[in-house]
Length: 110
Length: 112
Image 1 (cartoon, each protein chain N blue to C red):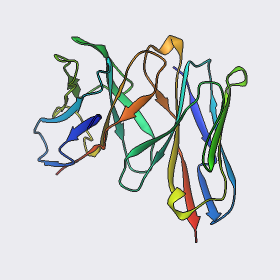
Image 2: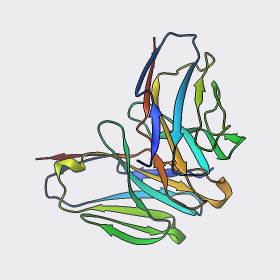
Image 3: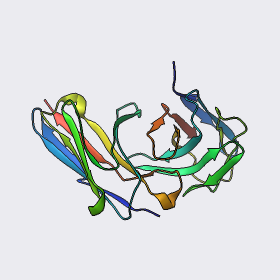
Image 4: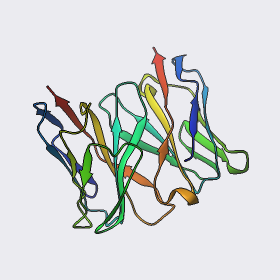
Protein backbone atom coordinates (compact mmCIF):
# COMPACT_ATOMS: atom_id res chain seq x y z
CA UNK A 1 0.00 0.00 0.00
CA UNK A 2 0.86 3.67 -0.10
CA UNK A 3 3.40 4.86 2.48
CA UNK A 4 3.00 8.34 3.95
CA UNK A 5 5.75 10.12 5.86
CA UNK A 6 5.37 13.44 7.62
CA UNK A 7 8.12 15.74 8.81
CA UNK A 8 9.14 17.04 11.19
CA UNK A 9 7.57 14.76 13.84
CA UNK A 10 7.62 17.59 16.39
CA UNK A 11 7.70 21.36 16.05
CA UNK A 12 7.92 24.03 18.75
CA UNK A 13 7.15 27.57 17.65
CA UNK A 14 7.05 30.96 19.23
CA UNK A 15 3.76 32.75 18.70
CA UNK A 16 3.93 34.76 15.48
CA UNK A 17 6.42 32.48 13.75
CA UNK A 18 5.91 30.82 10.36
CA UNK A 19 6.37 27.12 9.68
CA UNK A 20 6.22 24.49 6.96
CA UNK A 21 5.03 20.91 7.43
CA UNK A 22 5.82 18.27 4.82
CA UNK A 23 4.04 15.13 3.64
CA UNK A 24 5.78 12.66 1.32
CA UNK A 25 3.94 9.74 -0.25
CA UNK A 26 5.17 6.70 -2.11
CA UNK A 27 2.75 6.41 -5.03
CA UNK A 28 0.47 8.50 -7.21
CA UNK A 29 -2.63 9.73 -5.38
CA UNK A 30 -6.12 10.90 -6.28
CA UNK A 31 -6.91 12.21 -2.82
CA UNK A 32 -4.96 14.22 -0.29
CA UNK A 33 -6.28 15.88 2.83
CA UNK A 34 -4.72 17.83 5.68
CA UNK A 35 -6.33 17.62 9.13
CA UNK A 36 -5.74 19.29 12.48
CA UNK A 37 -6.42 17.16 15.54
CA UNK A 38 -7.39 19.29 18.51
CA UNK A 39 -6.67 18.40 22.17
CA UNK A 40 -10.04 16.63 22.44
CA UNK A 41 -9.20 14.33 19.54
CA UNK A 42 -11.50 15.88 16.96
CA UNK A 43 -10.13 15.85 13.41
CA UNK A 44 -10.75 19.19 11.74
CA UNK A 45 -10.63 19.33 7.95
CA UNK A 46 -8.11 21.89 6.74
CA UNK A 47 -7.65 21.20 3.03
CA UNK A 48 -8.71 18.74 0.37
CA UNK A 49 -5.82 19.20 -2.05
CA UNK A 50 -4.84 16.34 -4.41
CA UNK A 51 -2.98 18.91 -6.51
CA UNK A 52 -2.33 22.62 -6.72
CA UNK A 53 -2.38 25.33 -4.08
CA UNK A 54 -5.09 26.52 -1.68
CA UNK A 55 -5.23 29.15 1.03
CA UNK A 56 -7.53 29.62 3.99
CA UNK A 57 -6.63 32.54 6.22
CA UNK A 58 -3.23 31.99 7.78
CA UNK A 59 -2.99 28.46 6.42
CA UNK A 60 -2.10 27.42 2.92
CA UNK A 61 -1.21 24.14 1.25
CA UNK A 62 0.52 23.02 -1.92
CA UNK A 63 0.56 19.54 -3.44
CA UNK A 64 3.00 18.60 -6.19
CA UNK A 65 1.50 15.28 -7.20
CA UNK A 66 4.16 14.50 -9.84
CA UNK A 67 6.88 14.75 -7.17
CA UNK A 68 4.77 13.02 -4.49
CA UNK A 69 4.73 15.60 -1.74
CA UNK A 70 2.50 18.17 -0.11
CA UNK A 71 3.34 21.13 2.11
CA UNK A 72 1.24 22.86 4.75
CA UNK A 73 2.22 26.42 5.64
CA UNK A 74 1.26 28.08 8.90
CA UNK A 75 1.89 31.81 9.01
CA UNK A 76 1.82 34.07 12.07
CA UNK A 77 1.20 31.08 14.32
CA UNK A 78 -1.14 31.37 17.31
CA UNK A 79 -1.42 29.22 20.43
CA UNK A 80 -4.67 27.81 19.05
CA UNK A 81 -2.65 26.28 16.19
CA UNK A 82 -1.18 23.79 18.66
CA UNK A 83 -2.12 20.17 18.11
CA UNK A 84 -1.31 17.40 15.68
CA UNK A 85 -1.43 17.88 11.92
CA UNK A 86 -2.11 14.84 9.76
CA UNK A 87 -1.76 14.27 6.06
CA UNK A 88 -3.93 11.50 4.54
CA UNK A 89 -3.77 10.20 0.99
CA UNK A 90 -5.68 7.83 -1.26
CA UNK A 91 -4.63 6.40 -4.59
CA UNK A 92 -6.60 4.90 -7.46
CA UNK A 93 -5.14 1.49 -6.66
CA UNK A 94 -6.21 1.74 -3.03
CA UNK A 95 -9.93 1.85 -3.68
CA UNK A 96 -11.67 4.55 -1.71
CA UNK A 97 -9.60 4.47 1.48
CA UNK A 98 -7.31 7.06 3.10
CA UNK A 99 -3.87 6.24 4.50
CA UNK A 100 -2.56 8.53 7.23
CA UNK A 101 0.93 9.73 7.99
CA UNK A 102 2.27 9.69 11.53
CA UNK A 103 1.50 13.35 12.09
CA UNK A 104 3.44 16.48 13.09
CA UNK A 105 2.94 17.60 16.69
CA UNK A 106 2.96 21.38 16.88
CA UNK A 107 3.29 23.41 20.07
CA UNK A 108 2.97 27.18 19.79
CA UNK A 109 4.29 29.02 22.83
CA UNK A 110 2.97 32.45 23.84
CA UNK B 1 -27.44 19.25 11.86
CA UNK B 2 -25.62 17.29 9.16
CA UNK B 3 -22.67 15.24 10.20
CA UNK B 4 -21.26 12.08 11.67
CA UNK B 5 -22.28 10.98 15.15
CA UNK B 6 -20.30 8.52 17.19
CA UNK B 7 -21.56 7.16 20.46
CA UNK B 8 -20.76 6.84 23.21
CA UNK B 9 -17.94 9.34 23.69
CA UNK B 10 -16.36 7.21 26.47
CA UNK B 11 -16.78 3.48 26.95
CA UNK B 12 -15.46 1.19 29.65
CA UNK B 13 -15.60 -2.59 29.40
CA UNK B 14 -14.21 -5.57 31.21
CA UNK B 15 -11.65 -7.74 29.46
CA UNK B 16 -13.25 -10.58 27.52
CA UNK B 17 -16.46 -8.74 26.69
CA UNK B 18 -17.50 -7.77 23.19
CA UNK B 19 -18.45 -4.13 22.72
CA UNK B 20 -20.13 -2.30 19.82
CA UNK B 21 -19.33 1.29 18.84
CA UNK B 22 -21.94 3.26 16.96
CA UNK B 23 -21.37 5.47 13.90
CA UNK B 24 -24.25 7.22 12.14
CA UNK B 25 -24.10 9.76 9.31
CA UNK B 26 -26.80 11.87 7.67
CA UNK B 27 -24.61 13.19 4.85
CA UNK B 28 -25.91 10.63 2.33
CA UNK B 29 -22.34 9.39 1.93
CA UNK B 30 -21.70 6.02 0.29
CA UNK B 31 -18.36 5.20 1.93
CA UNK B 32 -17.71 4.79 5.65
CA UNK B 33 -14.53 3.96 7.56
CA UNK B 34 -13.29 2.93 11.00
CA UNK B 35 -9.86 3.97 12.25
CA UNK B 36 -7.98 3.26 15.44
CA UNK B 37 -5.58 5.72 17.09
CA UNK B 38 -3.18 4.81 19.89
CA UNK B 39 -1.58 7.53 22.07
CA UNK B 40 0.96 9.58 20.14
CA UNK B 41 0.34 7.65 16.95
CA UNK B 42 -1.35 8.18 13.59
CA UNK B 43 -4.62 6.63 12.46
CA UNK B 44 -4.78 3.04 11.23
CA UNK B 45 -7.60 1.68 9.10
CA UNK B 46 -9.67 -1.15 10.60
CA UNK B 47 -12.52 -1.66 8.11
CA UNK B 48 -14.19 0.31 5.36
CA UNK B 49 -17.37 0.05 3.34
CA UNK B 50 -18.01 1.59 -0.05
CA UNK B 51 -21.67 0.54 -0.39
CA UNK B 52 -24.41 -1.03 1.69
CA UNK B 53 -23.97 -4.75 2.43
CA UNK B 54 -20.31 -4.67 1.43
CA UNK B 55 -17.15 -4.00 3.44
CA UNK B 56 -13.41 -4.68 3.24
CA UNK B 57 -10.71 -5.29 5.81
CA UNK B 58 -8.23 -2.54 6.42
CA UNK B 59 -4.73 -2.87 7.81
CA UNK B 60 -5.64 -4.03 11.35
CA UNK B 61 -8.96 -5.91 11.06
CA UNK B 62 -8.10 -8.83 13.36
CA UNK B 63 -10.33 -8.87 16.43
CA UNK B 64 -12.92 -6.52 14.93
CA UNK B 65 -16.15 -6.99 12.99
CA UNK B 66 -18.51 -4.62 11.18
CA UNK B 67 -21.84 -4.58 9.37
CA UNK B 68 -23.36 -2.21 6.83
CA UNK B 69 -27.07 -2.93 6.66
CA UNK B 70 -28.05 0.70 6.17
CA UNK B 71 -26.35 3.50 4.28
CA UNK B 72 -26.43 5.72 7.39
CA UNK B 73 -24.91 3.26 9.85
CA UNK B 74 -21.60 1.41 10.19
CA UNK B 75 -21.24 -0.13 13.68
CA UNK B 76 -17.93 -1.59 14.82
CA UNK B 77 -17.74 -4.52 17.23
CA UNK B 78 -14.55 -4.96 19.23
CA UNK B 79 -14.43 -8.65 20.08
CA UNK B 80 -12.66 -10.46 22.87
CA UNK B 81 -10.14 -11.66 20.27
CA UNK B 82 -8.69 -8.13 19.99
CA UNK B 83 -5.60 -8.30 22.18
CA UNK B 84 -5.18 -4.57 22.93
CA UNK B 85 -8.59 -2.94 22.50
CA UNK B 86 -7.97 0.18 24.59
CA UNK B 87 -7.69 3.01 22.06
CA UNK B 88 -9.41 6.00 20.46
CA UNK B 89 -11.75 4.95 17.64
CA UNK B 90 -12.71 7.33 14.84
CA UNK B 91 -15.38 6.89 12.19
CA UNK B 92 -15.38 8.74 8.87
CA UNK B 93 -17.53 9.00 5.77
CA UNK B 94 -17.10 10.21 2.24
CA UNK B 95 -19.39 10.68 -0.76
CA UNK B 96 -18.20 9.90 -4.24
CA UNK B 97 -14.67 8.70 -4.89
CA UNK B 98 -12.10 11.50 -4.79
CA UNK B 99 -14.07 13.76 -2.49
CA UNK B 100 -13.43 15.05 1.01
CA UNK B 101 -13.77 12.71 4.00
CA UNK B 102 -15.25 13.87 7.31
CA UNK B 103 -14.77 12.43 10.78
CA UNK B 104 -16.90 11.94 13.86
CA UNK B 105 -15.76 13.04 17.31
CA UNK B 106 -14.49 9.60 18.27
CA UNK B 107 -15.07 7.04 21.02
CA UNK B 108 -12.46 6.41 23.72
CA UNK B 109 -12.61 2.75 24.67
CA UNK B 110 -10.95 1.54 27.86
CA UNK B 111 -10.85 -2.16 28.64
CA UNK B 112 -9.96 -3.11 32.20
